[in-house]
Length: 442
Image (spheres, rainbow, N blue to C red):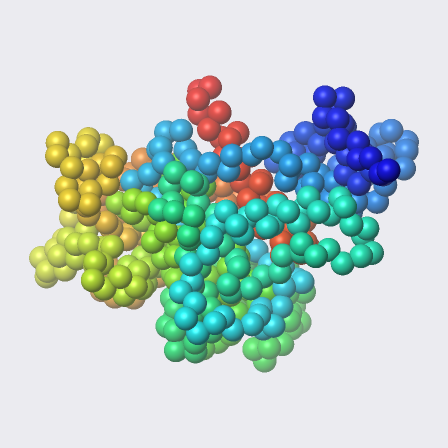
């Protein structure tokens, strides 16, 4: 009779009856990952310290994922200060790549598929893959393996924040050439320059070859030559696709304190559609959405719900686009107080936000992304026009969040897609918990 040892009280975690980890080692790896150390680096350090040889790092890493999948983690994705429904959210895309992901091989979904994904079913299947690895030899095929596809690839939003378990992911519509072209049109040369500065020399040389640019010289020379080529919109799109060819990275919705509320791994280039999917899955739409392509976000989201546009009034602008308002905004003389961000309305408006009481929803950008605005009316989307938003704009919470996420790319990007999304959701949950506890202690 086969017997599986699984006595947690002994302080041990059994992975596959051959590799057994102490719970202390599992927790050590959890904290190490929060400090942006890969499991391979941690194990190499321990082997050197102990003077012993451990099992293969890949097996130990699978054992750690096995441990996390069996741990009763809430994944609440909530800020203690902002509650379940933050009135102000900051949205951005974390650039991330998976070398093993072939998006071109994804099958077209059924004709009547509406983009609804059951979040609990999807994430349970991802956890089941992590758990089942302890029951199948490495050389055999795992029947519970989860592969990216348009019909079974859900984002994550906390249970209290989302409308229901059915979350939107309409990436299959990006396959339509007309829609993809419209959604990628928000890519600007300045935004691409930021991405180019993050690339290594080998990647820059590859991009130069594609654009017909001289590949000799320093890294700075390569970037300058590429920037000169980015005056053409089509070249911008082609370079952007090359940088994000393996995936569209993570669409992240966070509160001003840097606590993540929503995560969505994009199979294609990230566009406003991905954030619209997340926001339309929320139980209560935020009053203020800060995003670098605010106009594109408002236009796309309102087109998805034409009978009841979420961004209202003035299509998400702070005031009506009259000549007087535009002139004052350009001269930096216009101020639009949103007093309900600090003090609740005395009476809850119809469909009002449960925290502020207001039913108004604005799509704004901060001053750093003002250059992305193409429409002259977009000057009325400046977050600096709202006095009550200045604390949120000065907060370093979101900047630290994305800085932390970038530090993990060197080991996350080499994983399979299912392992990548499992570990990312897990890392963000533990980071959220740590940041919440730090705020409570302070």
